[in-house]
Each structure stands twice: as structure tokens, then as C-alpha cells.
Image (cartoon, rainbow, N blue to C red; front, side, top):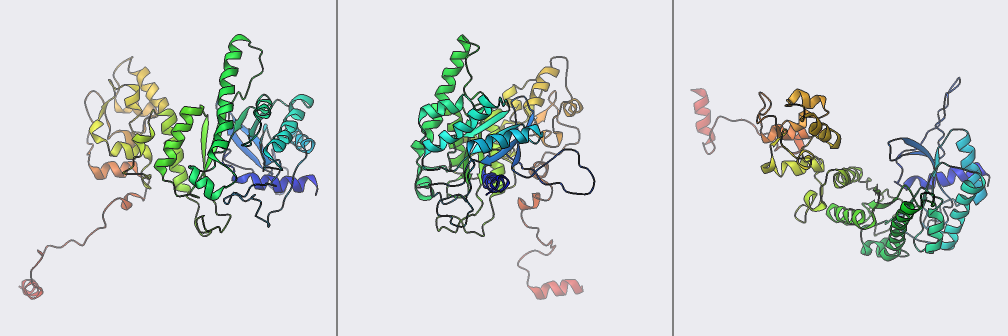
Length: 432
């Protein structure tokens, strides 16, 4: 099997990993084309300063000794074409793509070949060739294999920019059912080790500025949504706990795509729960940037997201007793609870109001989405002129176009005839 055939198979096998969000395409046509968007696994991520970085997203090998029912690379999937790089092949390929300006970094994962330690040794050798022999300084994200010896994790972490350990499913019960070779303990152990090692490294760098950095871009994780029966409430609480306990940079959610007809999985005809995935990302944003807690967004009485309203708007509609908020006096935490006001516009409001009074036109210029925010704020004690604050008006403003009807009762036929009047009397009245 030649190198390009391996690349085609292993980049296609990596597409189910949600830690990066887009991939390239072939652009064929007559005449010259400036630039390249080659389809072999090119994806994008964003650095801490907002730059978009193109990555080669690929598996080292799609051969795996585990039998996770939701995974296309499971050992029982005999229809899958198997392929594996050697460390030298993948390092040369990455550098060649970089020199052609196709990519700026590498996103590397792998099936479990023979054992977690053996697989990690192969990944480590690939990184060593890139960093030490070839002098590659680009971004590298590596998936850690649960069950790997901590010493191997330490060695990989000194060469990678980011590491991640996939938590896979939201509960131990679902892991036992769908991924019998994995356990919650095996997954959380390397996650804890990376978190502790990063804390140690931060202390080292305070004393020795030239000390090698361990996973400087932090760690992340991913879980599959829709393959198991957990509610959004359970998933969101787990997400909050992971951020608090392991100082993760991101939790990624991957809507389950049917790849197996196992009786413990949704039917192969089931569509991926993309809206649910989207709502989880919106709620994740509220946890990280808007100072919400999981219990505020969902609770046991309402364990799943509103399909029509986003989580922030849904919370605001259910807590109208906290509104309206006075723009000239509200704290930043209160401003962030207002639909239509984000972290940037909240900071702009706090800065601008020191110079004088704000009106509704000024708020629009500061980036506030007034179509939403106008129902939840006042400026100097006043609402926008002519605004009618009704439940219907608020819902129409907060829902996407065409979806308000899903929240409204079905229209009824207007009648001027009181109920209970016999039909014969009605006909006589009409004749008269």
C-alpha cells in the first residue's frame, strides 16, 4: 500500500473526531488555482490569540484491539480497510505538507495497536522525529491513550502543544455497554496526571523560565452524544465537573453518527442529533464565559434543552422576575445574563458609561443585539419608545425566523355564534 493510499484511509478514519471542526476539499478546474485546500484531512483550530491554524488531521493507525460499538474502527468491523503509518512516514508527510503551505500543524490520534503503551511509543517516536530531528515548530495536538504508562505521557507532553483524553460516553454504565474494554477510571487517570503535571510545570516555569513546557496549550476531551440514553442535564453536569476538576480548555461534543446496527445503539436510520450537539456547545459557552452553572441552565424537572430557544434565552424567559436590568447600574454578571449582550459588549458598556449616560442607539453601536436585549433592559429607567412587552413579542424576538409557530397554540376558527345554540336556531337567525 503506497503512502497516499494510507493517507486517504487514515484521514477518512479520523473524521469522526470532533476536536477539530472542518476539513478541506479538492478544488479542480481549468486554469491555475492560487492556494490549496487539499482534501486529505486538512482541518482548522484556533489558537489562544484568535488565529486560525490549519492542521493535518489523521490517525497513526486505524487498527484497534478494542470493540467500541459506536466506533467505525472497532476490531469487529471486518469491512474496514486497515492501514498504519510508520513514524518516519508520518513525520516526512507532515513536513512535506508544511513546506507546501498546506498545513501549519498536526492533529494526531490512533487506534490502539497491540497495547496502549506500544501505541504511545509509536506516537512519541513520530513527535521526536518532527521536533528533534526535523526541527518542526508547528502546532501539534496528540490524543493520549487511556492505560498508557505515565512516563510515556510525560515524554509526549513535552513535545506536544495540546493533549486530550476522550471521555467517550457520559457514564460508566454506558461505557460498560458500548465500550466494554474501557472504564471511567482508566480514562480519568491520565486526565488527572496531565492536569497535575501541568500544574507542576507552571511552578517550574516560575523558578526557571527556560524549563521545558509541558502541554502549553492545555488539554481537552470529547464525548459522543446520542449513542447512550443520558439526558442533557447529566451531560452538562459532567462537563461542568470536568472543567472544575481537570482545568480543561475545551469539552467537545460529537453527535453520534450511526456506523453499526448493534441492538444497544440507535437505529441505523436515526439522524445524528445535530441540534442537540449545537445546544450543548451553546450551554458550554455559558459555563465558560457567562458565569452560569449547569443547575441554572437545566434541572431534574427540565432535563433536556428547549429545541426552539437557545439555553440563555430559555433561562431569561423563565426568570423574567430578574428583569429589566438597568444599564447604568448593572454589574457585569447581570449584564451577561441579558440576551443580546455578550462578554465584549458587556465590557464596552461598563467602560462607556463612565463617560456619560447611554441610550439605546449607543448600545447598538457597542455591539448589543437590540432585537433581543430591548425586552430585558432599561436606560435611565426607561424602555425603548413604543415597545410592547408581551410574551408573544419576546418569543418572536428570541426565536429564529419561522420557528415561533412551534411555541404558539394552533390557530382556531373565529366564530361570532355562542356555543350550545342549536343548529336550527342558527339557520333561522341567518335567514332573518
